[in-house]
Structures are given as C-alpha cells and as structure tokens.
Image (cartoon, rainbow, N blue to C red; front, side):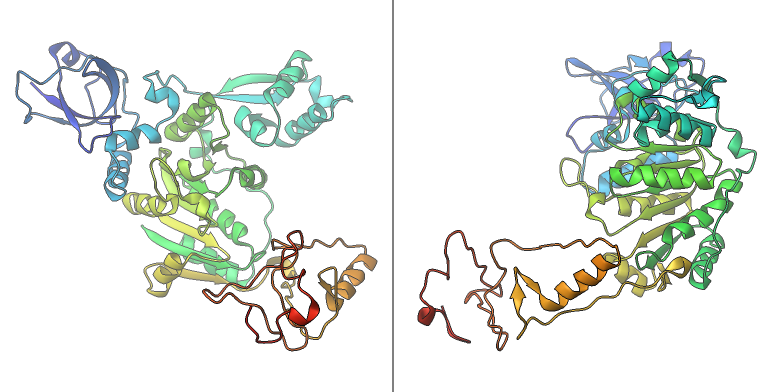
Amino acid sequence: MCFAEVAIKVPLPRTFDYKVSKQLDGMASPLKPGMRVLVPFGNQKKVAVVLAIKSMTDVPENKIKSIIEVIDDAPILSSEHIALLSFTSRYYCYPLGETIHIALPSALRQGESPDKTSINMVMLTEKGSTLPSLKAKTQLNLLKQLAQSGKSSLTELKALGFSKKTIDSLIAKALVTQTIEHDNQWQSTAPTVGSKPTLNKEQAVACTAINQSKGFNTFLLEGVTGSGKTEVYLQAMEPVLERGEQVLVLVPEIGLTPQTLQRFKERFDAPVVMLHSGMSDRERLNTWLDAKHGHAAIIIGTRSAVFTPCQKLGLIVVDEEHDLSYKQQDGFRYHARDIAIKRAALLDIPLVLGSATASLETLNNAVSKRFHWLKLGQRAGGAQMVKHELIDLKQQPIKAGVSKALQEQIQVEIERGNQVLLFLNRRGFAPALMCHECGWLAQCHRCDAFYTVHKAHQQFLQRSEPSLPLCGDEF
C-alpha cells in the first residue's frame, strides 16, 4: 500500500495524505508528483496536486481516505516547479495549496483536462495576399501585419490590438484562414535572427558577461533611458535560443507587452507568447501549455508569468525591476522579481535585472557584489543625453506660474516645430507661498511641509496686504 501527499486549496498551512487504492494501481501510467487528483475533503470533492508518493503515513488507518480519481496522465508540474512553489509558500507564509492554485490557469484549477497539444495560427489566403482595399482600417492593418509576419498566433494578434471580431470578419471574407500547427521546430533549428545594430563598448561588455555566464548568476543591468538595455536583452537571448532553450521576460505592465512582443518578433523568427491578466482563461491556458510543452521560445508576461512552467528555461529577464507593479499587494502577497531570482537559482541559469533607477535592495546587492553590476552610462545610437536645468525663481517675474526663462525656452521649441509638454505637479493654486525677494517659504510649524495656497478658499489671499506674513514671520 502507498500513500500520496497532496496540496489542496484550503487556508491551512499543511498538506494531506490520501491512500492510493488498488483500482488506481492498474492505471496505464503510475501516479507521480505533479499530477492532479480528485480527493474527498469533508463533504466536498476537491482538485489536489500530488507532492510526493510515500509508503508510510502518520494518519490513522481508520481515518485516511482514498483518492477518488487521477485527472492527469502525466505531471503538469515538474519537481523543480513544485520546489519553487514550496519555497514561495514558506517564504511568504502562505498555504501551499493556495499558492499552487494561484499558479495554475483557471481551467486546470477546476479539474479540466489539458488537451492542448498545438496552437492556433492565422495566415493569409491567396485572395488575402493581394491586400485588397477595405473600408475597415483595422482589417486592412491586420492583413498588412500578416503579410509582414507570414503567420501569427491568435494570442499575438490580440496582443497587438486586433480583436476576435476583426479576425472572424476576415475569415468570413476568405481573406485569412486559421490553422492548427505544431510549433516546436525552433528547438532543433536555430531561429533566424533579423538585422541588429552594432553594440557600443558598454553594451558589448554587458552582453559578453551575460553570454559567458555559466550556471546561476544575477546581473544588474543599470543604464540611463535610451542606453540600449533592450538591445542587450535581445543579443543575450540569441545564444540561448540557438541552444533550444526558452527565455522568460517579465515586464511591469500590460501596456508594455505589445511593443515588447513586436520588437522580439521582428528580431527572432521564433514563437513568442504572452501572459497577462487581460487575457481570457482559455488564452492563458493555451499560453501556459505552449510554454510547458516547449512550443513557445520566448514568454513575455507580467508578474504572474513568473510561475509559468517551461520545458527548458535558459534565461530570465526582469525589465524595470524597480517597478512596484511586480509586487502583488492583495491576497497572496509576493514580489515577482524575488521569485524570479529564486527560480533562476533552482534552475542554475542566469538572470538579468534591468533598470534605469534600480531599487535600493538591488543596488545594495550589487554594491556588496552578490549581483554582477553592469553599467550603461551613455545613450545608444549616438543619441545625446537629456539636458536638465534647474531654474531659481528668486527675483524672477512669474506669469501664470511660468518663469520667464521657461517661457523663452517654450518659444524656441515652438519655432523649431517641436511640441512642448508641461507637467503641473501640484494641488491648489500654488504649491507654496514664497517671497520672490529672498526666497523665503511659508512652512508648517509641526512638519517639513510647505503651506499650499488654495485660491478657491481664499486662504492667505483674504488678508489685507499689511497682515500678510513677512519674510521669516510666523503664521
């Protein structure tokens, strides 16, 4: 007799043992860790994930229950993935069953069978390849996109802003067709790489350091805006894809995924998939399975994508690692960047953290040499650094809150045909009450904040001029 230790979605910090009945012993494939099973729990039946198979249990024989049904023919979670989720559960003090539940797509949580073995691709028909004129601009743009890419998955097209209605309309007009294809040939054949710019010295040093890394290493790629961090990512990914290994790229927001997807698609002739909360449950399941079965070469996603299983992961990239969007703030609270570091360590692969303004904890790790610090101090492609100028408002005439120096610079840019964007980062009529003769500011007695002038309430302005506070006087 053997027993299965399983994790169930319940708010309890423990696992549960169930008896493997004789009927289950006759299965075509033996019960293994990572497989889902249906078990009795109280008066309910719940989907559980097997963590271990053992020959002994501490549960009394008269109280232990038997597994009702084995859902999967093969494990849906690898031993490395279970180890990652177990660490996450311990580190963030969250029940293991609920942690695993959150890491699975909705369909798998409910016990559905993962029968996805291929992906849906959309391509032009012979009629559509002529790019006929269409009144609907969105449909015409979709035809142009397919003419450029050759074929694209449904997930990619939706990420680029094309709705299912637009795709269905073109299918009805026989301009595009939808096919089912296996897309795992990239593992045996090195993907075609598009044109790429020449790296500057700093970029080349960073890319070489990442490519020559053996085993687990964490790199902080710190570079000013426009220094070419994304290009370093792309060229560091090239040898990984040539080895038939996958790349996981985390981005902080959904809005960044379409432009990232487009740039990666232009560079590599390899399947790219996306994972984020804006996708439907079925789309998330398809993408999850594409990554698990190795059909996807590059997986781009937001923070929850850090739990995506991969057949052979070779590199993890966390773009804008300082962004607070990587922190899950409610329910299961975790930090995707930190989990990515642990996952890279478990898989013994390199990890790249990119940022123009790295977080303090990451900088501390870089200073203490726990992370390899790669710096990009100059802009790529000959672009000039942004010039910043602070304007002292003392003894300067102010018109509608704008200084004379700023007015003159605005006029110069307008005459050049450029646009000007002004950020008014304040509340009230004025952020402070200041003397333009000496620069004195009205400050609160109890804190370091300055008083804000609110014109609607006539605060400070209702007083007669002699009663207004003079330089250094208290309110």
